[in-house]
Image (cartoon, rainbow, N blue to C red; front, side):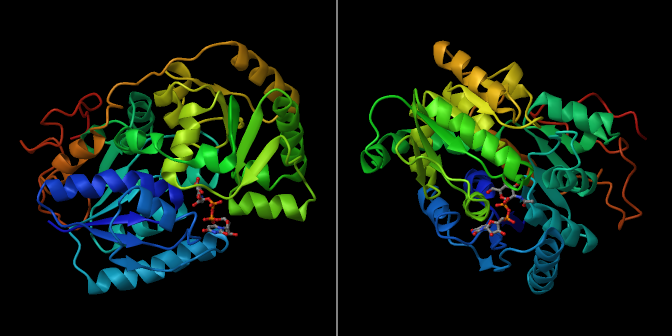
Length: 393
Ligand code: UD1
């Protein structure tokens, strides 16, 4: 069984690390394709090193571009690669442009796709990631979901339940496997960071490409920083926008640093009194770590981190951000683990993938395949809970 695993951007690397290990432990020899969507050493190499990810079998080197050109470049280069290399299944993770592009290419070549982190929905189609999620989930054969709300979203879209596998959150696998190692990170010493501090990350276009919103958030950060030093590893997109729009921070209270490696960032996240972010994955990590998280967005595709975790959706209004930070700094938060966020998600995925493509696959090429529900070998066997039984076929 030749699985081809795709990774393109920083959050993907955290997800493929445990998956590659689990596929290998199951006796398979997966290939890793790095699309090159993220290419700076701090956005890519540092993560490969910290997460012990083997060097990719190929780097497509696509780099940056508009959505269309970046997606198209991944498609043409990956299509060429797939023509020259055998693949029985393609595994895509998350919701970045590389996830979308490789899914489209594989499905059109008749190679079944597994999507890890399926079913998340912000219900906001102005987010490029939401568009990517919708298309990828419409096309993938296996939909591996992190939480029950994702199953519900897919079922509401009319997805055949036999395609849905609730397996838990694969980022938690990396987090739990790395926490001890992260504890010996020297990053606090390197930053001369003593006592309580807060951690900030911002990179979403809806915020950082909107100068008024970005300036408002930065002014709220300054107010919060009068009580608590803030460390702000700056994404390249955000740095560029701050420079273009003359948005400066006071370096005495808001410490701008380059994007950090996985272990250094994890240590800061675990020891922070407060995290302010517009990231998706950080909402999940803070839930497991029990660190209060303020999400600076109007919506989230990860509502379980609010209902079961430490996350609060605050929006972009500077007063609301100040007020929420004030409340959180006076309260307490506890670690919380939604069901199956237990460090064994990759193992569950690998055991399902290594069974081979389900006969109930809805992929069109084999017209002789038994109708969904007509096979004894449904993907719902085994230990993995799925949504309600199919009513199709
Ligand atoms: C992408 C993902 C987003 C994910 C984020 C994590 C999409 C649509 N978005 O957003 O879901 O949360 O990655 O970081 O795929 N750049 C560099 N060096 C790099 C990478 C990017 O300088 O290594 C700069 C380039 O100027 C580039 C810009 O950042 O144009 C945006 O990068 P891109 O990969 O297109 O999207 P992200 O904003 O990083």
